[in-house]
Length: 80
Figure 1 (tube, rainbow, N blue to C red):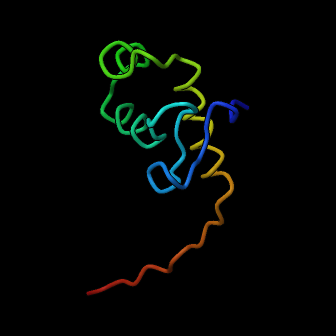
Figure 2 (cartoon, helix red, strand yellow):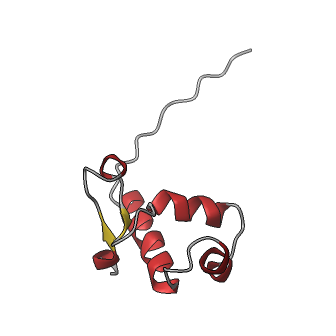
Protein backbone atom coordinates (compact mmCIF):
# COMPACT_ATOMS: atom_id res chain seq x y z
CA UNK A 1 0.00 0.00 0.00
CA UNK A 2 1.09 3.52 -0.73
CA UNK A 3 -0.27 5.16 2.41
CA UNK A 4 3.14 6.66 3.12
CA UNK A 5 2.23 9.09 0.32
CA UNK A 6 -0.97 10.22 2.08
CA UNK A 7 -0.96 12.28 5.26
CA UNK A 8 -3.44 14.06 7.47
CA UNK A 9 -2.78 17.19 9.51
CA UNK A 10 -5.55 18.88 11.51
CA UNK A 11 -4.09 22.27 10.51
CA UNK A 12 -4.40 21.56 6.77
CA UNK A 13 -7.92 21.37 5.35
CA UNK A 14 -9.26 20.34 8.74
CA UNK A 15 -7.34 17.07 8.67
CA UNK A 16 -8.57 15.85 5.31
CA UNK A 17 -6.14 13.36 3.77
CA UNK A 18 -3.64 15.01 1.40
CA UNK A 19 -0.77 13.93 -0.77
CA UNK A 20 2.19 14.12 1.62
CA UNK A 21 4.07 17.40 1.46
CA UNK A 22 1.28 19.17 -0.45
CA UNK A 23 -2.08 20.77 0.16
CA UNK A 24 -3.67 18.57 -2.49
CA UNK A 25 -6.46 16.54 -0.93
CA UNK A 26 -7.39 13.04 -1.99
CA UNK A 27 -10.81 14.45 -2.85
CA UNK A 28 -9.31 17.02 -5.24
CA UNK A 29 -7.66 14.20 -7.18
CA UNK A 30 -10.81 12.05 -7.12
CA UNK A 31 -12.86 14.99 -8.44
CA UNK A 32 -10.52 15.37 -11.42
CA UNK A 33 -10.64 11.64 -12.12
CA UNK A 34 -14.43 11.76 -11.89
CA UNK A 35 -14.37 14.53 -14.51
CA UNK A 36 -12.62 12.08 -16.84
CA UNK A 37 -9.08 13.40 -16.70
CA UNK A 38 -6.22 10.96 -17.19
CA UNK A 39 -3.37 10.77 -14.69
CA UNK A 40 -1.05 12.49 -17.16
CA UNK A 41 -3.52 15.36 -17.68
CA UNK A 42 -3.83 15.92 -13.94
CA UNK A 43 -0.07 16.07 -13.58
CA UNK A 44 0.55 18.24 -16.65
CA UNK A 45 -2.35 20.69 -16.32
CA UNK A 46 -3.04 20.89 -12.59
CA UNK A 47 -0.34 19.50 -10.32
CA UNK A 48 3.03 19.17 -12.09
CA UNK A 49 4.82 18.57 -8.78
CA UNK A 50 3.06 15.23 -8.12
CA UNK A 51 3.47 11.95 -9.99
CA UNK A 52 1.49 8.89 -11.03
CA UNK A 53 2.31 7.07 -7.79
CA UNK A 54 0.74 9.93 -5.81
CA UNK A 55 -2.50 9.62 -7.80
CA UNK A 56 -2.49 5.85 -7.40
CA UNK A 57 -2.03 6.36 -3.65
CA UNK A 58 -5.15 8.55 -3.60
CA UNK A 59 -7.14 5.77 -5.25
CA UNK A 60 -5.76 3.16 -2.86
CA UNK A 61 -6.60 5.37 0.11
CA UNK A 62 -10.17 5.94 -1.11
CA UNK A 63 -10.63 2.21 -1.71
CA UNK A 64 -9.41 1.38 1.79
CA UNK A 65 -11.91 3.82 3.30
CA UNK A 66 -14.76 2.26 1.35
CA UNK A 67 -13.62 -1.29 2.14
CA UNK A 68 -13.58 -0.45 5.84
CA UNK A 69 -17.11 0.91 5.96
CA UNK A 70 -20.04 -1.05 7.28
CA UNK A 71 -22.92 -1.22 4.86
CA UNK A 72 -26.40 -0.70 6.27
CA UNK A 73 -29.30 -1.33 3.96
CA UNK A 74 -32.41 0.78 4.26
CA UNK A 75 -35.67 -0.89 3.40
CA UNK A 76 -37.29 0.92 0.51
CA UNK A 77 -40.88 1.91 0.94
CA UNK A 78 -43.21 1.60 -2.00
CA UNK A 79 -45.57 4.49 -2.49
CA UNK A 80 -48.65 4.15 -4.65
